[in-house]
Amino acid sequence: MSNKTRREHLKTLLGMAALGGTPFAALAATPVKPPEPVPPQGIGYRIEHVSYSDQGGRPDGVQVMVNRKHVYVGHMFNDGVTILDASDPRALKPVGFFSAGAGTRTHQLQTAEDMLLLANGANIVAMQSYDGMRGYFENNLVDSITNRKKFRSGLSIHDISKPGEMREIAFLEIPGFGINRVWWPGGRYATVAAHFDGYTDHILAIVDLKNITKPEIVSRWALPGMNRAAGEAPTLPKGKRAALHHMITAGNLGYGAWRDGGFTILEISDPARPKLLSHINWSPPFPGGTHTPLPLPGRKLAVIADEANAQQCAKGTFHTFVLDVRAPENPVPIATLPTPRDRDYCSLGTFGPHNLHENRPGSMQTEETIFATYNNAGVRVFDIKDQFAPKEIAHWVPPIPPKLIDPRPNIALDAKTADLFVTTEGLMFVSDWNAGMHVLEYKG
Image (tube, rainbow, N blue to C red; front, side):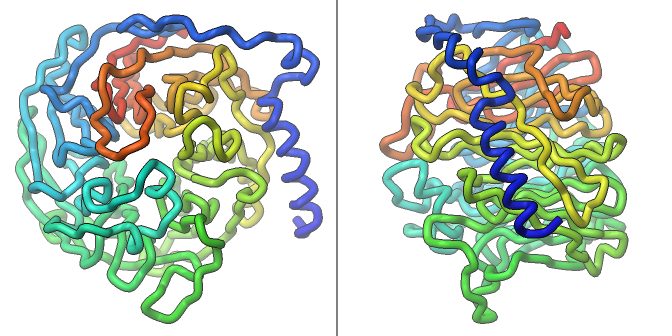
C-alpha cells in the first residue's frame, strides 16, 4: 500500500472510529444515560457476578493467570504476587504471597507447564514524582526515575506444581530498569519486554528456556531511536513514548505493541535473528498507547487495543482496532470495536480500552468473540464474526472503588478494570488497579 493510500485509509478509519461503528444519525438521536449508582456486584448484561475478593487486603491487581484452580495476580503498587485458591470460585481464598522485595514491581506474569515466569523491575510509580497519570505514560522509562531505590531487574522463574506455592528456581538478571511484560504460552522461547541499560525504554528480548533453570537471552530488537547509548536520536516528538508493552507470538510471527511507537510484525522463525516484516503507527491521528496485540491466526486477523491514559478523554477517544494481516508485510486496519456509550464515562475519569483476553492454552480460545477490559467501562464482549462490523454482545460495569491504592496525586477515584482471564467454562477472573478481583460468568 502506498503512503498516500495508507493515509487515505486511515482518514476513512478515523471517521469510522469516531462513530464507533454506529450510524451518525442514530448516535445523535440516542441520549446518553445519566450515571446510575452501580451496586457492589456491578451491572451486567449477559454477564453474571459470582464473587469478589480483596486479594488478602492487597486490592491492586494487574495481570491474572490461572493454574491448577489457583489464581495468580500481580500487583501494581503492592510489590508482589498474591495466590488465590479458586477451587470454589464463589469464595476465593488467599493462600500465598510472593515478593521480590520492596521497590520491585512484579505486576506481569505467565503460567504454563506448572511454571510461572515473572517480570521483575523498578516500581516506577514509587520512584517518580509526576503529578498525575499522563507523566507515567508520556515520558521514556529512563527519564521517569526521579527517586531511585533498590530493586531487582530481570526474569524470575518459579515452580508452581504445588498449588499455592511459588518456588523460585532461576533468575535471569537484566541490567536496566526491568521487565514490563512477558509472553510465554509454554515451549522453548519467551518474548520479553525488557529495559536494558543504554536504551530509552522497554525493547524486545527473546529468551531461550531450553534449560529452564538457566534461561538465556538469544536476541534483542528495538525500534529506531531507542538505543540512546549508540547515539540514536528519538524518532517520536516530546510527550510520545516508544516502548514495547509486549509481543504475542503465533507460529513464526511475533505481534508487538509499542505504545506510541505503533504496531510491528516480526518474523521469528530464527529466534536469534528477528526480522521486521511491517511497522504501522496510527498515532497521529489517534492518541497512541498501543498496548495489547492479539493475533487470530486462523482468520489472519489481529485485534490491537490502545490503552487509554488520560483522564476525562483529554487526548480524545482511544480505540481497539481490527487488522487484516493476510499479508503480514502490509497490515491494514479494517474496523474498530464499538466504543461503549451507555453512560458518560469520560466525566468519571480515565476512559477507554486497557487489555484483551489473550487466548492462552488452557483458557477459552476463540477467534470470533473478543473479551476486553476498559478503564471505567468494565468488561466488554464483542462479536467479530463479521470482522468489518464488530458488535458488543455483553458487558459488565464495575462499581467505583471505595478508595485509591494508586499513590500518585491528581488521580480520579474511578474503576480501572485491568486484566481478565476467561476459563473454558466462561468464568472470568477480573482485576482492577485499585479495587480487587471480581469473578464473573459469561452467559453468552
